[in-house]
Image (cartoon, rainbow, N blue to C red; front, top):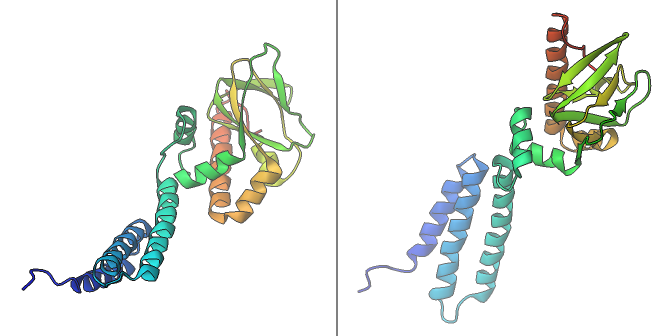
Length: 225
C-alpha cells in the first residue's frame, strides 16, 4: 500500500487554484496559479504512462505566462533595477508608484547644465514644448522685472502644461543644474493611455504650484512658472 496516492496531486492543484481565485491581491494570485500549474504538471508527467505531454506543455505555457505577468507586477511595486539617480528622483516625486515612475522615465530625458552661460528653458509669453524638473542645482526665474532663484525639487513650465498655454515666466538653468525634461505631447499621450498616471502627474504639478504660491506670499520666491 502506497503512503501517497498520486491522484491527490489533482486535488491539491485544484484546491490551490480555487484559493487563488479568492485572493484579490494580483501578486499572490499569480503565485498561486503558478504553484497550482506546477502541481498539475507533476501529475501529468509522473502518473500517466506515457505522460500527457499536451497537458504538460499547456501547464508550462500557463507557468510561463504567469511568470511574465508576475514580473510586471513586481516591477510596478518595487524600485528594483532603478539607477541611483532614478531612485533619488523617485524619492523626490513621492506620490508616484514605481510602475508609474518607470513609465514616466521611459519618455524622460536627463540633462546637465555644464556651461557657465545659463540655458534658457522657457520664455514668458512664448509656447513651450517641454516640462522640466530640477533634480539638483537651481534655475533663475525672471518675472515682473524681478529675478528669483528656483531650487531643486520644482517643476518648470507646469502652468503652461496644465493650461496648455504659453510660458508665464523666463526661466534659465544655472551652471551645475541637473534636469529631467519631458516632451509635452508625449507626456499628454502617456496620461491618456494611463489615466491613473495622468492624474498622478496632474496632482504633482498642482502641489508644485501650491508650494510656490505659498512661499511667494512670503516675498522670497517666485510664483509658479
